[in-house]
Image 1 (cartoon, rainbow, N blue to C red):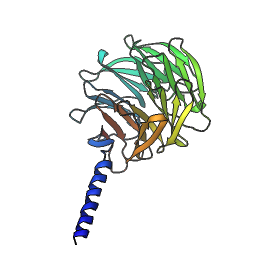
Image 2 (image 1 turned 90 degrees about the vertical axis):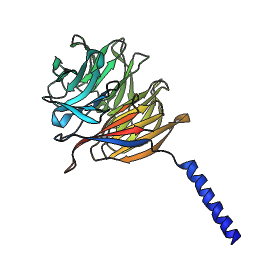
Image 3 (image 1 turned 180 degrees about the horizontal axis):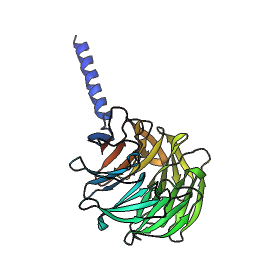
Image 4 (image 1 turned 60 degrees about the horizontal axis):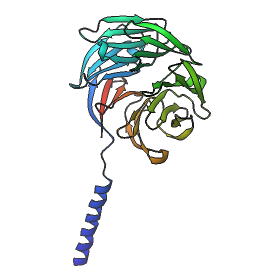
Length: 331
């Protein structure tokens, strides 16, 4: 009996030790859900003003943009009358939100204060898509047309110039400390590197094994570019110094947004197959999927706020289940 009791106690103690060593918090914890009643169709992209706790998402299939308060976790405003809204950009210094419209070839600006009245309309941007802001030059970049990046002065609301590309640009990322832009061109099966100073393509990286390179995230400090591909469903990692592929790994299907969390060295991939994948970046270009979170079919649009440590996922209406924004806290 003494032997059996000692043996049992030692087993329990070992289990406790093992549990203590292996139990880790989930990398993303669902904290809040904001319903979007009356919103149907697919979503496109987000923008976030972390200081104001303001989130704006393009409800492309609904021809609206939805404004949310992520401090009170409430829906604030519907910006209606849009035409297949795609990219969104908030510029707090101008008190404006810019929304690209895929159908009418315009980027529209709205005043944030008051009732979100129209501030400007920038036309001649057929199939306007993603928006990015160059904080140093104070210029907006917009992907549009059969192959171009437009350069917009947000103060005068004028298209100043354009950079020609081989195909329509999807996600693109600007370096903060260098003049390069990395651009996904899925129809051309390429990633191109653009020099913002010369306004020219300076490198072309051809995709031999992967297709559907729509999403992209940048780790500028470690010279890594993360590209989400749909066929096959892989996250491909490039060395930004030379365009070499240093790794690729399986992710869920139909990704449209990937984001890099520099604090935790993680990549978050929103995938339309119904999962939110979390990839941990380890030493020596080793990458491991550490979470595979079930969401909903078509939930492929997301946004990560490093200031708030939150990931926002747009979940479309499916059957009796209404559209909503799910808020995950990074841990």
